[in-house]
Length: 210
Image (tube, rainbow, N blue to C red):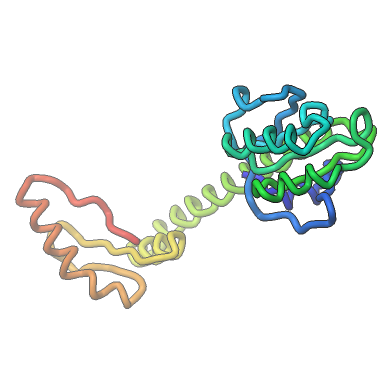
């Protein structure tokens, strides 16, 4: 997922935090545009909601009610497009969002909301690609380890490092076990007991790692 901080610094998004407040690292699931007084039935929660400010109303009470609905739905951020309805953000809007723990941003006058959406989906695509490449990198490394003369040791070590924990291989013929790192040795007796128990039940114990 994409963070508000990433989106606000992405070229072309033009998002600006109101009052110069530091944006949180909270993640957003998408970008939604609505001028409805109550857009929550069209939201899943987690979105950055963009509006020209028309549904906010012209009073603090109306704004409080609008922001409260967003908070209940789980909307983490509100972006106001300046220009048609608001040339600046009223203080009571900032106070309402701050009280609801909703990040408040603006989009400059004349900047299409589509720019924000396009920036979001560009970041999202790059994030997904990075996750995929990372996964492929791990699989490739393990495949290469399996071709080494010390294949079992190399695969166990590579798996443990990829998981950020430990891994162990216990042969079904009660041969010498292989594990990494050395601190995982304390788990071997328990794993052996589990292996014997599963074999007696006619099952094969799945590979163990942590």
